[in-house]
Length: 241
Length: 329
Image 1 (cartoon, chains in turn orange, yellow):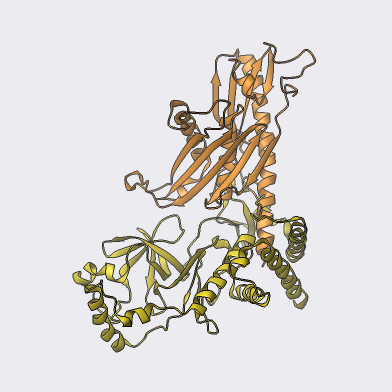
Image 2 (cartoon, rainbow over the protein chains, first blue to last red; image 1 turned 180 degrees about the vertical axis):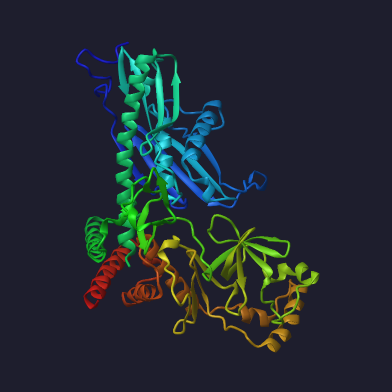
């Protein structure tokens, strides 16, 4: 199948190095401590953060740091054919774990001992790159909940199809079976916290593909930063003196 | 960006937008350092030669001071810290808080006060209902549920942080169980610390407690009972009533009866607080009273206060009020 046309356009009309339209909104769940909606093209994800709060299961309590928990689920209506079992299967357990580890690495857990932070992410529309979208949404929600973090974590995926590196794969490109690299990145300290890849790539090409994903992460970080700053300013001036 | 969750028609949208823009221009004039807002991983400009002390919400990253929270940079002499907005409550010694009992444990109650852990109220750090100062016996421990039960709403003061968590105390008649009223939860950053957190609104017969943790209590006024003798007389009576729960005596009915006017005032004040919290305005007694008076002067029903029209009016009123105080100052 041809994923990049001779004119250099992808199936959805993007250039190979072009990202999908991103949109973020803070404050989607009224009862949560922090919440956010993050969209990448047709992928739409909602995240809610509760805590830091009292540990529900006392045996899990850690005396010098916070316990971070994460639950990933997909809404029944998120995919083309309705999902039978939206959570608890192998795939969502794995993604929950990935998101938890990524977020735990950047939360300053030692500042909130003997407490627990719950992150709930749900995919509302799935069109490839849900993993990245979930991490971005979780970052925003954690920032909204006022949880101290080492740095913003942002995530973006990239792939390699028709001997072209492609940024931010959508569902059709994702299911083509080619290599799919998901990168989680800390822009300020310039470090990678998450790297996942399906199938194989030669090392010299891999470098290019990963660099492309990192560029995508940086672009998302800039956007997220703007959204958070605007939100903070608005809260501040509304409150008044 | 956090949108205000209201269904507005076109004119209301424009009016609200205008009011909020006015507020924005007022606050940007007030803050000489209006660009003090930071988001996570922004570097905070500091002069390292002065020897800065890094406070909450900051991190030293390769000699650069970096924010770990979204908020506003505050500078007090050498100390630089970031004040987070929408975060959980950060207790300070002496704060007046309102909480809900989540557990009755050995010699202590655990209270949910919207902090990262449950707060602890020791049996020994509160006045017993009989008002006598004495050692707490094993009998007192057994009777703890007769003082506070699970899900009771309690007002107390922050005593300090000990090794096993945050401790509260309630050593005065003004603290203790809150009954016959409503508990509202607002984001804690909207409640400023002030000299006065207990308010008795005499014209309505209502008590208003603005807890520093964002829990706000609106309830019927209760006289703080200092007379120990009177208490001792009434206590055995209460026990009698508890022993035969099926027949509620007339006396008790009279005790728990709240007149309809008081109930309406409670609801009106509560809705005023709700409107202010939806709009994200600072919550203090003056603004609550202004909002309440505005609603009664417009002859609005209590339920109409949560409508979009009233919210827009409150926003416009707030813009007006802040611009007036600015001119005076």
